[in-house]
Image (cartoon, rainbow, N blue to C red):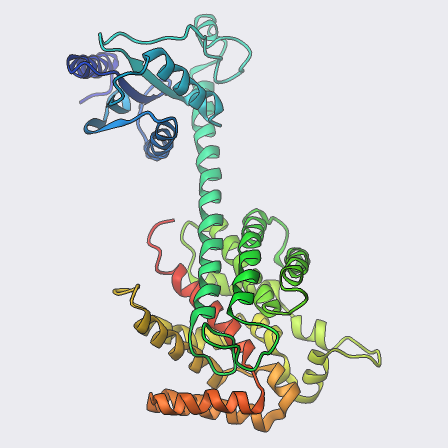
Amino acid sequence: MPTNHHSILQSREERTRLRIEFAKSGKISVSLSLNIPGVPKSTDLTRKFFRTVLAELEIYLASERIFLSSDNKNQFEDTAGEFYINSIENLNIDSLKIKEITERFEENHSAGRLIDVDIFDVDSQPVSSGKAKKCMVCGKYSAVDCMRSQRHSYEELRETVFSKMEKYLAEKRKESVVKKISSLATKSILYEISLTPKPGLVDFENSGAHSDMNFLTFLDSTAVLAVHFENFAKSGYEFTKTLNQALPEIRRIGLALEKEMFRETDGVNTQKGAIFLMGLSVFAMSYAFSRNENPTLEEFRQTVREICKNLVSDELQTNQSETKTHGELCFEKYGNAGAGARFEAENAFPSVFDHALPVFRLYFPFTDKFNREKINFALRKVLLTLISVNNDSNILYRKGRETAEMLKEKARICLETESGEKYKELCEFCIRENISPGGSADLLAITIFPGNIEKIDKW
């Protein structure tokens, strides 16, 4: 159908016919359309904008206890643009009240001037509150006044409309990405905690080599982490400086989170390592999504590399004072093998991407994602893979290289034999030696995080 004045009028007549059909059933109808000056009325941008606004409108009406029919609804596109119409099931509600509710939706919406929500009563007559809409360009005068005075050119009107749509959709995408990424970060932490049993680590049934914490302690601190992951994600999405300036920002959020963790756990360090590694990961992943519609995991890794460039030398080699941290002493003695989480971060998580993530992909098809035994088996496989390759600086510092290598070898044997008895021996070894491979547990969460990210089809 050619897009001209006549065909647009025909489309609008068809919409009027639909409203009359709804009125015959004795019901009030609600419709949604867009204010698009000129032609074409429909583009990829307007379609995406319309779908998003429609979803918001349906939720808004439901929150006001306005019930739409599940049978009688029409959503289509014609030469007049995108259009949606449906009947309202509420029988004892005044049509003017519904109009007031939909006007609030328009007024409170950031792109409300681009939206027309119309109400027609049981006689198919339009319901009006008498309010005049402001001009979408200048906002000073009524839309009718600006139109009659021709204050704004056709090009200015079109540019304003599409600019507002793009800005709105960009904000909605940021909101969606930030929430999804922070949610997946929390999910990753919870899955790691839930793996039971774990060698020397806190799990659902016992506290491993830790006498000062248990499963509930971890749940309490994870609840605190969950709130702050959105801060990491939002900061990463909005970051505009060069990436070598990002680390102080990540640390600022992380240090504030550490304080809240210690307050929640009465001073017990449950997840300090996870705060750094997951905070960095969430920031970097969100940054990558702000610059690419669907970034690859290699783009995520490159972002991490740029953020953490020279991290090991900057933080473990520069201290010339007599007082040194455990991390500095471990690095001094073992080199990169003792650099722990900093080495993993600087090199964009080689233990995760070279070893653990392929195992995750193999055992986590999520065809039966609510089967606890299968999930537990898969998580155990990934954790054992990490223990077998990861140089845990905490174990190196406290127990030395020999014990650390024994732990790795026992994990490799568990992987090769898939023996429950060997796994039990590994857990007993950790208790006997009073060691906890917490660094590998943190990396388990980091493995789950990108593993779940790449399973999402649409952002």
